[in-house]
Image (cartoon, rainbow, N blue to C red; front, side):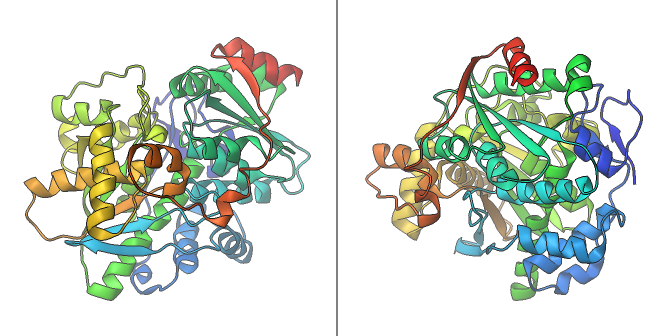
Length: 431
């Protein structure tokens, strides 16, 4: 199966080529020429590894030997993926039990191992260039740490990620370099895109990306959409679900659309955003108006020009088609804090700020929809990653799990640069 650019101005490529190229030369995003449905046997699979393996086989076209692929999947997902019932047919899919306590472990670990498998025997070294608004950087840093023939350069906005997030992406060293950018996430993302479109730079350095602009990030994120439906189907006989996705760059929601196209029975997607609500605004008005992002408590969603909107438009073509499957809600910081406090008091469940945005969006959705279809909230990060903002605003103590405590006492190592592409290019060509 080949992959085309959403801009339609560059030749189609294989999955392996799309994975390593990352961003097409015409500044589009790679999309599969078709969505192959997963065999219906997925309904009866009772563990996450076997289900993920079944889905991966569907899109990988025998590019990797079955035994090697199964071993890769087993190594990637050696942690639980629990689905917790909260109340009123609302479920929390906890995606924070991986090594960096965020959902982006699913994509980063899969990509690093698939890339390493493809690179075996090749006398080639690549540089992963990635922008992060919070959790992507730490997941990529951990996922690619000490992987042979791969260097990682991470751009993150100075002062706009949590202390724990910053420690996770700046304390590893080895093949991981953190660039602290004087600007916001949109600046970081713009600089990364400029690097991929710089033919002079790309002739000297083999660049690839681990952001959700890379098609290799979206497929593994589709695994847990299948899994959470699968759990409810086997336990409760559920035939259809609604997913609520806390959304910033819209890669996670796009992965859900991929899962629906491949066979997950989804009635609706709820896109919960903070005040950076350009996509919900489009869903209501039909006007897409990207703008500079604003800083919020849910910092990983502080995105003013979501990259994956291109993929959503490519799939749905029009606003009218999109709103049939996606509904969007905006949630303020005040509403976020109120939701964390209410849910903690009433349900004894601690949401992180991103999960709280999603939960509030579910409440707004339920006011307008009286059906009793189960709603699955993607709880994307452990609340301990936002310990300071929760404890500073609410009378709630947040315990840090041992897996996250390790990096707090390590020394930060970063290189500060201005938000100008020339500074990034200079670093990449002279390091």
